[in-house]
Image (cartoon, rainbow, N blue to C red; front, side, top):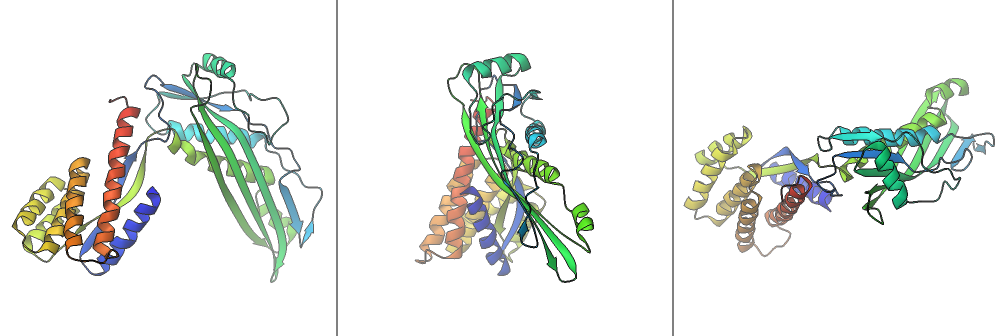
Length: 347
């Protein structure tokens, strides 16, 4: 939902910009993790609790439409790469004091398709051995790989598609169940061409390499679920040909938001034109967001939206739509800020 809001903001801002009335810009917002660990958790350990997928299932290789029956893939190293990539991505964020990688695979059974949680006893043992207060565990990792080789004009073409799904969980000692479960799914695709099969085979990754790269790609983005992180977003402000508007825009372009706010507030107070007043109120909302005053930003976004609605009965009006979306974004930021305070122990 959040991504949909941001995309809609970008599209609406683009429409208004084409009329020369809006300038938009990129920002980074600090976003809380999906999972909130207790403040006492300073060290986490990444654990491989999955069973490697056997060589045959999930791998289909065809040459000119004929399926090959001597193919296989090896997934053992992919499990390690998945854990390593996740651990490195989490460690890159300045949140936990230490992120460790548990050396041993936990499960010894052969039920690779089965999603099995760590038991409370296993959680206690792993935390004692690793010195961690919490565990992030890879509880299942599955692949489906398709390799296809076919003639394409005067060359041989080859494609590899690897689809992967994973289950991640967070655990803490003293709990009968996991803290949260994260389901991941993604895919990677390769395409090459060559004059003959041998050369083509050297261009395309080996099955094991394709699995390892897909596993690392899949889990490396999952850090967002476990640590606060930065995300890109779009914002905008209205412009006008008036001198004071231009001065405020110049300050905003230089990220001098306090100065821009002062001018926009004076414009708002002096305006009798409701449209200009609504635009000034919208700019004040953005300005307050940029200086971290999210509640004030929400108040001014509501004022702006009310003024725009007074001027039209069209619910699809671009200004009404833009401010409606922005009000949702600011509401989400207030909620996110409260969650961040919890995650950093500020409450």
